[in-house]
Length: 507
Image (cartoon, rainbow, N blue to C red; front, side, top):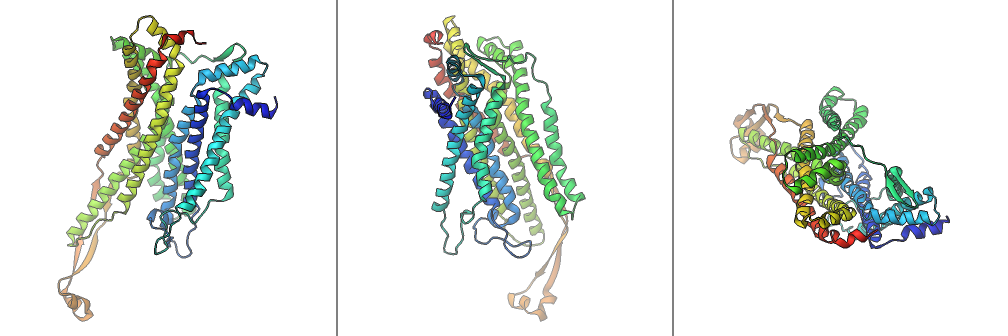
């Protein structure tokens, strides 16, 4: 098959195929913007001078201080996780129609390898289109947003660019990763002229092995503080060990929670089958037990965002407790000092990133649920034909989405909070002292008279445990649950069209 023919066949298809390509390209565009933004932050050069020198050309301290740029870049990279999960959900959109198209191409004489390359090329080209548009949007936005103020300071690092190799790694690497992921997903697919078949899923339920990954993630975060104390002064070793512990811990915890959702789905199905008495719950129970990994695929991006949000809530609680402790210590020595809003305002930016991640994950949820309903439309139509009311099917879809979602949301928030508290579990201040001059400004400024009016006030050491941020966690959980409910509502709009009896005549 000639390359031109391969490209033409990859671009062919129905409106569903066009929607899948557009959504995949949009996901790649968002991932490209997040990756290039993180690389831009890392590309800021450290100014000449001592270790405390700052880049004074920026407004925000997150960009000025070299020690804070790594965390800023990490937060931007974390936004790529829900975006890539959205891309994975979009790649499954219209899978049955695509399978029939691939089977027709096999019937026309294509080999299995050519059909596989065709599917891989479709995803890779869509992702490449998205990354190229994302690169163009990044370059245009860099010029539009480059607006120094009267002091010459910038709101964003529009004066630096990542290296060409780093840009190429993002723009070309994302399509390669998307193509490899498609090839990996097709490993269990057999494409023949008679149709597309998949290997049967295992009958037994998932094991509780996800708990080991979650434990590994928590252990990695708990090891950060002891490692910092034990290796104090060995900056070269800490420079790679601490980021490694963070990366391994975060990835292990996220993968553990996502895999654990499969275990939760299976056992929710078992409980529903054992105790439910209504048809809707029994239908949902059978579906949850038949494909427990559907919950892992569907909620992956949302759970990753909630883990990050739980950790951010724990960090906010730490900064709030530390600010309160500093205020109390200042009052003990008779100083009325205001709070330092830097860390709490920084957490506001982190919370905004979490909100964006949840919003993107909601898009992935909608795509996944609608795709599942459309893919099983013949089964739903058969149930309606046998007398099952559509209202029962609607309640079944709601049960199937909400039953694993609620415990999975609680698990993700708990793990994220424990990761954050593994870094900082308490706040303490040492004994401090301050000189106070009880006289007029003229007497206090005069060295000859200042000493006789000066007294030293000591403040004792204070140690306080950090409270669990229940309020913020409740808001995160409510937002995630609202996202699931919105997803169910949108999915039910497609259910009526998918249960039309004409679907039984479709091939």
